[in-house]
Length: 275
Ligand SMILES: NC(=O)c1ccc[n+]([C@@H]2O[C@H](COP(=O)([O-])OP(=O)(O)OC[C@H]3O[C@@H](n4cnc5c(N)ncnc54)[C@H](O)[C@@H]3O)[C@@H](O)[C@H]2O)c1
Image 1 (tube, helix red, strand yellow):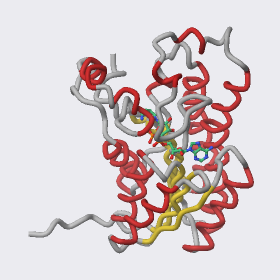
Image 2: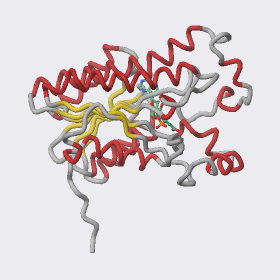
Image 3: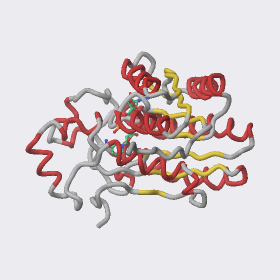
Image 4: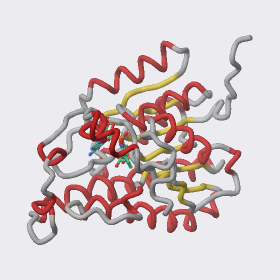
């Protein structure tokens, strides 16, 4: 018997940042499979974005790729407007765009990912531009994305649902990468504030805070077999997470099944940040 896919998002339109790769790409594909039309948002000229759209349209879904730098207000507005121009409205939003550090390039392993000496990244040693860059993408970018989407949800008046991708680093301090931890804690608080501000419009806002997930961001770990095996011994469920694990958690929070849940944080992390 053929699998029947539940169509939780039939007739809905989704805006997904970080959509060219990793969790954002997987979430876009799954949203489309369940009936949503998806504006896949990523850095301009990221070739992976077209692949995601192609996968969606080949499977019979609807998607467009929109190039935008989420740290720029005009780009976030243009991306949200592109979704409305293409599909008529926005109902759902996942803000997954993010960087691990100021030199992070998704899909590449940098020196900073490999060095065992974290002290170069300590606050007392680091250029302030590093701090500003990470906060501008990971925190300001989420705020700009959220409000560009929320304004359009308010315009149609049928409510909506937003999921912001934070991190276990919001809970556990990361020496040598304060700006990442601070940005992800900021996303958590931003989510809670927005949940209250947008509740009168029936717009729910929640956070997903992943553990360590096998995406381009964790490449330095996942490609080194010995390091990966050593790390996995610390995960109570015994494995790295997959982009699918995060997409499933995000889609649950976006869906009507989570219709009474807002301002919350969900930790799909295999239990690693539980203790
Ligand atoms: N992989 C992990 O272990 C892990 C753990 C916890 C949280 N996260 C968070 O998950 C989210 C998704 O990351 P991922 O793991 O899928 O890695 P990823 O590198 O595949 O995804 C991040 C995406 O954001 C895009 N991006 C970066 N800067 C941008 C900008 N200024 N404007 C627009 N897009 C930009 C990248 O090009 C990339 O497509 C990030 O917010 C990350 O911080 C990842």
